[in-house]
Length: 138
Image: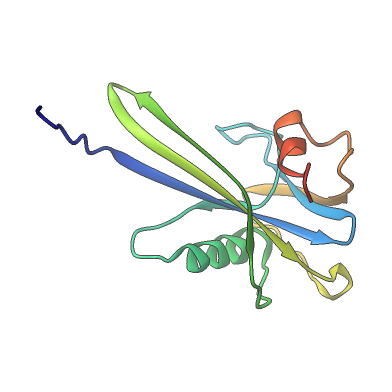
């Protein structure tokens, strides 16, 4: 039997779900964004080379919402898939983390990637079905 190992590009996306009791922080992508303009989402982004997962999550939360608090994230959900883009296979892994916060002590400072933020409940009209699924067991 012959074994072949296929190496492919890997993208890891880290998402921080900030929760204060029954409220969750979402941010709105700018309307002029190339990817999902105007969509509401949880803050996060791609892991960079050489970063640990916690370092990457910490950096993304600092960049996107100015979050500087110390935290102990807990994985709540992950999703992975293999995609083909321009004939290249890409392994995409998205990991969601819950981070419990006291929003009265937070000062949200949005980056230029986002135009608004809201604290919402699980059944908010601003959440699409994909995002609502991430909150089912929280």
